[in-house]
Image (tube, rainbow, N blue to C red; front, side, top):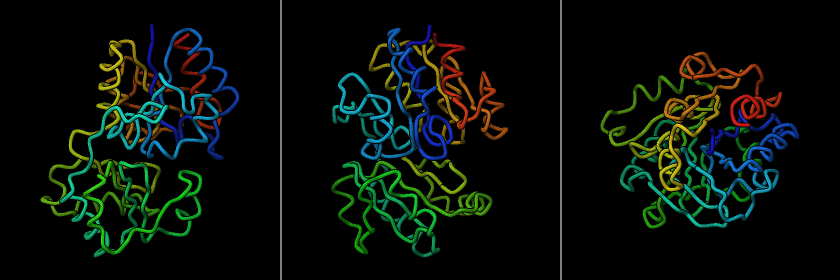
Length: 270
């Protein structure tokens, strides 16, 4: 019996217009009516999810949760942060300096929910309002970040082969103590070591006293890999790359444009 489903958002739950389809909403409602808990598990920051949580009828609700910034933050939808593990402050400074010296776009997800950005390309700037209401330009002096904490950082460029080469060639001392992953064909995702969606799932399941065998994880990309591996049932949507499909227990017939999450719930959780 599946009691907890954690689900990626972009290219998994959401369609290309960043909406939760009627079919997915109906399946999620049926799962929750049966006593289950559906939890978005995303690389985004928890304050950027109002639109999605409203569509899930979970906005502001106690007893409903979000795992955000790849597992660095677990928050209750009432606004309470339950768990936080951010990027070390000295690494934040060094990572920003490295991005600036290499002309790399950067996004900084502060633990207070603010998103700061710098040197993003036009497509990314155009899409930012879909994810967060008030993104702010990153100031030249970033020393203030040590006081508020950083849950996650992104390096951004619409060229995944370049990003993988860039990450490979980063100074090993800079990468030490960090978790590096990739997503959405344009991001290097940077978290503190040991932070990933799988660990976020483990922490939430422990907090809620749910056995891992009673969990299901649904995703599509490389930052979903650990949660797919550790869940009781690890599910890849049809649009997932081959490496994710191979790691999953189940590969769905549907993609994110065709109610993939509804397929997973109807097959394994109802």
